[in-house]
Length: 92
Image (cartoon, rainbow, N blue to C red; front, side, top):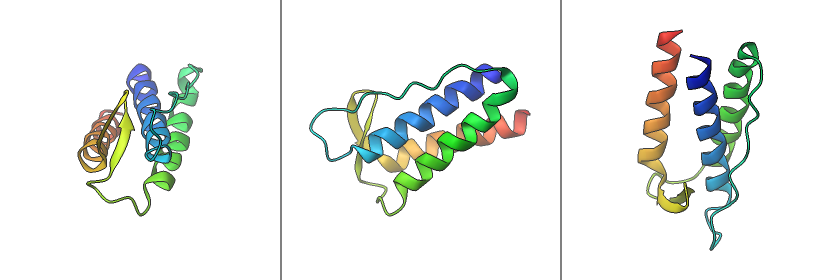
């Protein structure tokens, strides 16, 4: 479960970075979310999630954001990450 949470935190950090740099010609460097003790991973999800939400405020669903080296619409990506977050929450 901690590995899933760390993967989610990494994805949230990547979306935050990709949203912040959405106007850039080149994709931003992916942020590195360090692997800490299992007890800290909840805080990592919370921090990365907050950063992601802050970057997404006012961004239309159809806006293109950087994700894994390519630009994709924000809406479906946010929906996917929201579903992953919900599944993790229900599994805890």
